[in-house]
Amino acid sequence: MSCWRKKSKKKNSEANQRQRWFQENGKVLLEDLIELCNGKSNPIKTFSAEEILQATDNFSESNLVIRFNFMYRGILQNRPVLIKRATWNYYKSDTLEKICRDIAVSSMVSGHKNFLKLLGCCLEFEHPVLVCEYAERIPFNTPNPEMLLPWRMRIKIAKEIAIAVSYLHTALSRTMIHTDIQPFNIFVDSNGTAKLSDFCLCIAIPEGETFVKVHADRVEGTLDYLEYNYAATGLITEYTDVFSFGVLLQNFFTRTYGVVDCCCSEDESLFEEFEDKQNVMNLRISDRISKFVEEGRIFDMLDPKMLESMGDDETEEHKIRRMKAVLMLSLRCTGHRGDVPKMMEVAKELKRIERWT
Image (cartoon, rainbow, N blue to C red):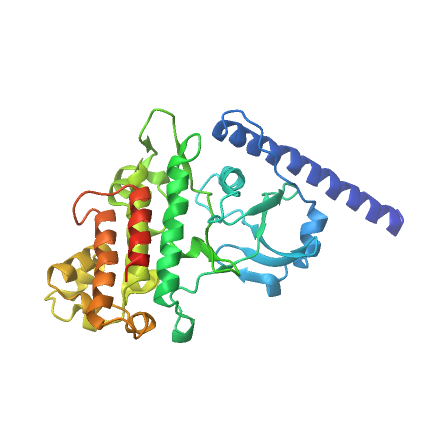
């Protein structure tokens, strides 16, 4: 067989495989869209495999901007984009279903400014690929103090993500629970607008119900952000997200800045007055912050760089009062103080604190 025929046969074989993937992936995605949108049409732009490969230079390592989320930088139709490609072992189970859920929910919320906008997808790979607007992930747990966000930016991001989660809970035909609210799923565009992303673990609560229960061995998410009841029993409610958001606030506004730190902080000074340091280290950040608040040691937790960024026009007392308001709200979210608020109430409170002078 000639070299030309071999190449032609291989090309036809690849084209047939891509067509099969397109049909198989499209079927699962369509089923999810119909379920979540109550049968209403929800058109999504599709890109070819050739367009994706060209945009990413065949998924070149040099274009991989977020290794954990397998996100690549690319140029598609003369605009910068983020291209998300999950591998087969990225999730514990049901990889195809999770990616299709990510696409489906992204398509439903893309009109809202506080979600990472879905531009389309490609169904011609073994697992679908998402094409999103270009934005930068927030600098989190960075050793470079110059990259840490100032107070105004942190409170703005927190408020806008709270608005996004409120939208998931209240604005769609079914209540959607994100279940994985954590820093790595938050982006900021060139205008400084916060964007929530990654809906692969998103769960829809049936109409007329207030919860969903999954088997305990199917509980997924970021360990330190998992609400206790969900982690133990698989019960998912709006509080699942409220709790995670409370932990996000605590990580975002204290010296334990970053998910790694809150799991295994090296800052022994935070725990030096406790008799059993190992037990304290095993406590979640919510429990530790609650104890510090009880002891009136809020200043010990605050990020000095963030306090400096609040400006010279405020007294230190006033800065700490604003910080305490955020931390007390976070402790309400995690169930350590008073009644647990709805996400809409959380967003309103953050907006009030942001404007507080």
